Length: 92
Image (cartoon, rainbow, N blue to C red; front, side):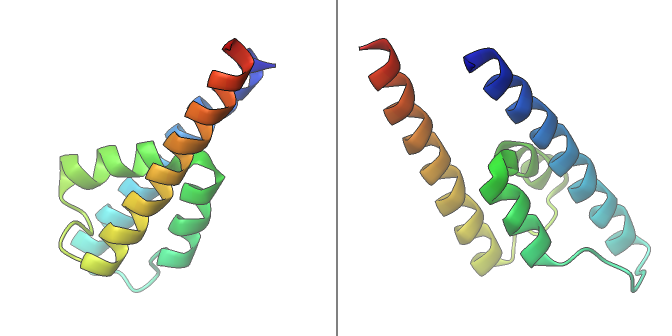
């Protein structure tokens, strides 16, 4: 079960990071068809926050938008807390 969960997290983070990078490229080209922040927050809540944070810090995309930045870190912290609690109960 743990193996499948880790595979899921890997896939959702790669997908989230790729989508975030796509939005960054569209923003640079000033295209109108962008991906909504709600979509990114949904991906983060689904486990893809690490992939988004890596692109956010690597590319600087949405890093100056405080409300987005704060919510992303809140979701990431919730995931870390949840993972810690679940694994500590499984192992201990």
